[in-house]
Length: 398
Image 1 (tube, rainbow, N blue to C red):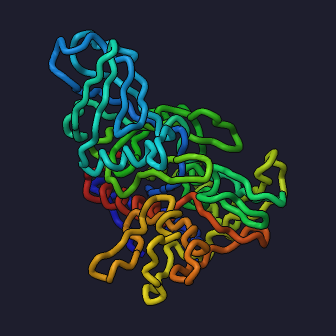
Image 2: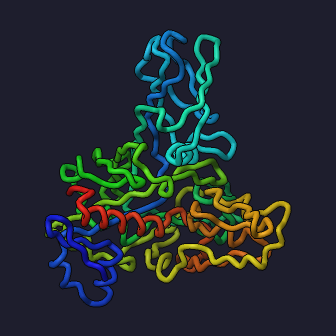
Image 3: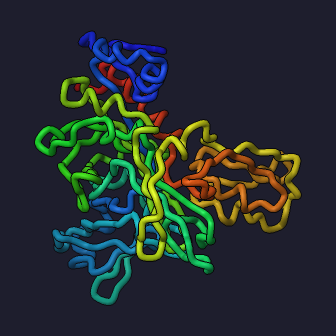
């Protein structure tokens, strides 16, 4: 294990490294550690972005009445910016047109892509093509992020159900779940709003701050509100996630946790200690309670791909059903499809391809097979490592 020290000689390790120590009966070494970098990645519906967008020359229009970014509706205001030719707007991560949602829009912007802005004002339409660099203000605000894990969902009815908890309709005898378990930041600390407020974090790779508890926060299901500048984000860590009931948005968060008496017992928590309630999609009636060890222990984080099974179908079902649009045709491989770095590890492709191109161990919850994951440990582990590196190099000041 690589235990590093930052420029203040603090010992820094990742949550994953700490959990390995505990499993190796080296729990007593926790007293030698100062900071543990924790992280989570998953669908976070309460995500929005606040933009200041220059659209036209001053005096071109009085004030915007409606605004669309790549066809996704935003909400103008509250500042009218009268006769300035610019617009303040809020865009929700869950707004969408077709299968293109706010999460995909945010990813495109952070990737440096140009987007089309359409403004309506007093019966006239104004258009402009801009990139994120052209927008002086682009702040992401998560109204409820980093839930201290969540629930698993199943379907006990005989009919398949349209739901935000699965890419396709959830069939009887299937389950999906959210939560990164033992590496989740709020699983590893005492959640005190006074101490959380103003704390520095990484949101999608950008330095941000915690604004306090988030909406729907409770003692049993804590979550936090976070803000960060989109100009500094890494597109790998965010994006859209298509479900059978609309388009969602995912984010990745990393938080440094101080090893002190308040946090120490939380930091020792393992997946097998963390309950994962299973509920029926209709009415949210409890079915039973499993553990995060059931869903994550030895699970594969990405699909194994046997490209030689590919029949190069005119219509690739796996490509159509990929929630993050990660499966793309590769010209130099004869047009066969492969997942790119946008893969979320959800596992939907396994059932989607009739020729068995995609294989992945996805585990089960209370013996019900998991056919969709809505949290991504691979991204979370990567950002936790990056935060550790930044602390060690003095790039992230504690």
